[in-house]
Each structure stands twice: as C-alpha cells, then as structure tokens.
Image (tube, rainbow over all chains, first blue to last red; front, side, top):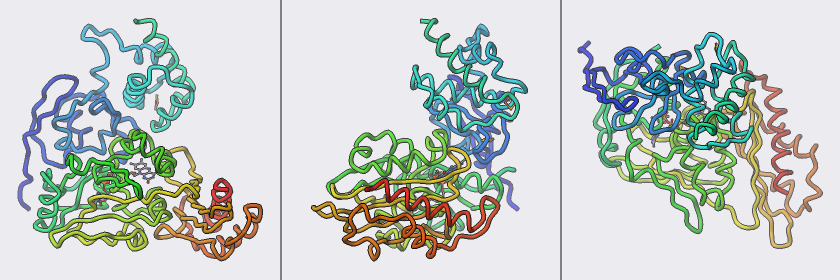
Length: 163
Length: 282
Ligand SMILES: Cc1cc2nc3c(=O)[nH]c(=O)nc-3n(C[C@H](O)[C@H](O)[C@H](O)COP(=O)(O)OP(=O)(O)OC[C@H]3O[C@@H](n4cnc5c(N)ncnc54)[C@H](O)[C@@H]3O)c2cc1C
Ligand code: FES
Ligand code: FES
C-alpha cells in the first residue's frame, strides 16, 4: 500500500495558532490530544453519544470525535484548557463544578464544562428546561446529574456576581 | 477505533463537487459528518475519498416562497431551528427538528444529509414523505428532482446514484386548512425513536376532513405512509375513533424484532402514536 499522505494542518485553539502534520483521517479529538498535547478533551465512545469529547467550534458545542481536524481549519476551537485564566483562576463554571461536587472521576467533566459554558454564553439565564435540554447530550457514569445541574445554577450566580 | 485512510477534498462549488464525485473512485460526500464519521470510526464505511461540501455558501441557504421551504445541503439542523421564518411558515419542520438528537449533533448535522443517509429512524425522512416533498440533485449528467416517495429504497439506502449530490430539499408548505403533528417514543430524550408518527390532516372550508395521512419512522426499511382517506373522508372530527385507527394502522405495519424493541411493541407504539398525532391535528 502507498504511504498515507500527510497534510500540514493549521488549527486555532484557545486563541493560539497551532501547526502539525497529520493524515486527513485524524479526528479533531485525537489531534487535540495526540498532536497538540491538550489531553483535557477526553475520548469515550467515538460515535457521538457520550459527550466527553465536546469542544466549542466558533462558540458552538460540537463532538470533536465526529469532526476531522483537517476540516476544522479556519475555525476558532475552544477546549477545557482555555477556560481558566492565564493566572490559573477557574472559570465560573469550573468553580461551580468544584464547589457543588459536580464531578467524581472527572472523565465526563470536560464535556460538561464546555457544554455548560456554551449554554451560559448563549443564554445567561436559562430556565430549568433549557438546562436539562443542554445537558441531556452528555453522559456521566458516577456523579449523577443532580449535582451537575446544581452546579449550573451556581455558575449562573457566580457569573452574575462577577459583573 | 479510527477511520481508514482516505483522501480529503474541499469542494469549491457544487460543480466541482460533482466533477470530483464522478472522477474519483469510491468517493463520498461529507456534509456534517454526524452519521458518516461514526460509521467510519467503526470502519463500517471505508470510502477512499471524501468531498467536503459543508463550507459552500451557495448550499447554506433556506428559501421560503408561497409554496415551499427549500433547504440547501449545507444547512444544519440548528440553522433550520433558529430560522424564525421556518417556524411561522412550516412549524412541522421545527417540531421534527426538536426531536433530532441533541444540540451538539444538530450544530453539525445537516437536513439534506439525513435524507441522503436514508435512515428510516430519521425524523426528516418521515417529514419529507408525509409532505410529499422532493430533493433536487446535481451530477455530471445534469440535474433532476427525486420525489420523496422514490428517494428511499431501504435502510441507509437512497435512490441517489453514486455520482449524485443532493443540492437542496423541498418541503411543501401546508395550507391554512391543514394541521400537522409529530409524536414519537424514544428511550431517552435525543435518542433515535423506537417508533414515531407524523400526521397531516386537510380540511375543507366546512371543517370536514378532506384527507388524512401519517408517515411512520422506525417501523420499516423506509418511512412508511398510510392514508386514512378511505376511513375518514367526510367524517366529522368526532368520528375519529381510536380502535378503528389502531386496527387500520397495525394491520398494515410489519416492523422487525431488534435489540431495541420487539416487532409487536413497535407496531403497538406506531398505532398509538398515529392515533395521538391524528387527534392532535383535529
Ligand atoms: C449521537 C447521535 C444521535 C443522533 N440522533 C438522531 C436522531 O434522533 N434523529 C435523526 O434524524 N438523526 C440523528 N442523528 C444523525 C444526524 O441527524 C445526522 O446529522 C444526519 O443524519 C446526517 O447529516 P450529516 O450532515 O451529518 O451527514 P453526513 O454524516 O455528512 O453524511 C451522511 C451520509 O449522507 C451522504 N450525504 C450527505 N450529504 C449529502 C448530499 N448533499 N448529497 C449526497 N449525499 C450526501 C454522505 O455521503 C453519507 O453517506 C444522530 C447522530 C448522532 C451522532
Ligand atoms: S467520544 Fe465523542 S461523544 Fe463520545
Ligand atoms: S464524574 Fe465520572 S463519569 Fe462523570
């Protein structure tokens, strides 16, 4: 078989331009983790169901396991590594997850954090139904969803008291 | 698992995509990738080339005129849901979209992709069938229009040729004397439906039912349409009886047993959902 063609891929991740070479079949999830060392984005099912690979592309949550890195060029990608400030201060959504005990093993957490961040950027005051609807696409096997839901409520309070 | 190697081509126009599709061996269109990439990750699909049409501005259009809502092949489920004109002109599209997966998937997946994918569990296949819609396609051989009734041949099998691209989907609007309703049962919100029914009822000016039909998802190899005209013509709304509808539907459906549900359960659900969705139209 012929050697597989490698492409020069340029991604904008958390505001930084990153270059690497990879074949067209490189999933965005694997590019973030393997090529760029951003292992905060997790990989579970690789068919779009679990949600732990969720990142933001142009501020919309998407599955990085169902996106090819080569097709995500020219877009703005945000991962969990981009949430906290440069000085390490947690993003309100992260702080709320910590305070409300919204994680145990943490495997699902990056996906929930990105999904919740996108929700609160689009709708700073979501109602109960909008919160449930937004979180319904992410699975957590150990914490349970009640604390995760409370964390969203707390994040809203933190964000409002920030201003 | 990971996808098998393939060549990636970002199309620069519909014509370019059509040329590539005919020149390259074993090539497939990549739209939102929300159905194709899972299949590739599990190596259930191993195309040699992908032609990405998701960035073509000419395909990212929704047009509404007197007769129909026309949706370009790059329009995502989310874009459709957020287009307020669609909600007012053909609310059935919005009712259906809310049942499709989760927002994260809808942000990438396209309406035309779900028609090309021809999954009989896909909400849009049933919607285009009940509305008697169509898709417009393009290939090196030219353009053609495929009516919804001719588009679906089997599970994940459309009547598109290997070199044909869906350019847009045409959903006829409902008149002022028509009502529609979508009902489905899924294990969890956002999952593919175990069964679903989408109904359209047309009235005459005296508010008598002129015609009624239901398209079903997840109960056969393709979306199935049942017309109730022989039962309902001239019926007053109050004559719509549960048992009559239930019997009429269940005698005509032949779902299969699978890991998600038995054939009997699916048939039962479909008949109940048909009744509920018809009732919601009256
Ligand atoms: C977790 C999960 C849950 C889901 N739940 C649902 C659900 O409940 N209901 C539902 O309906 N869908 C569901 N989907 C599927 C989703 O709606 C897909 O977006 C859609 O079915 C396919 O659209 P796409 O743009 O992603 O197509 P792609 O994955 O890019 O393509 C799918 C197929 O269609 C072909 N194709 C795409 N566009 C064209 C075109 N313009 N011309 C010719 N061929 C084309 C491709 O070659 C491929 O064979 C789900 C997906 C996931 C991952
Ligand atoms: S790894 Fe992407 S959704 Fe599960
Ligand atoms: S914290 Fe363990 S899976 Fe959610």
